[in-house]
Length: 109
Ligand SMILES: [Zn+2]
Image (cartoon, rainbow, N blue to C red; front, top):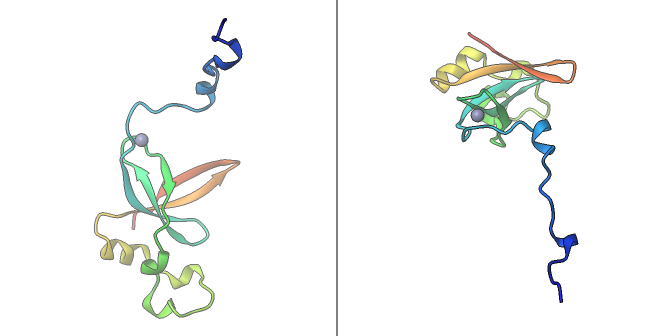
């Protein structure tokens, strides 16, 4: 009897790694703030610059007076310099779309 059925011997997909670039390091994410339509918390790898989102509430980025408003606009947030004062060392990035590609630009204020 032959138990070594070829159907169960799966080949490892070898072409997959071309599309998904493997990183050669463990990402070291640090908290940052991202401005797109509104401000939100994000994380950025300090080694490769890769961004990912963070589910932390944006309430601590709002002006205290804006917290009870039903609708929030960009002007209801603290200014970038106030955010940096509140979170020393935090970096703030502006997210732009260049076609389908995301472009992050640091806001230096
Ligand atoms: Zn990384």
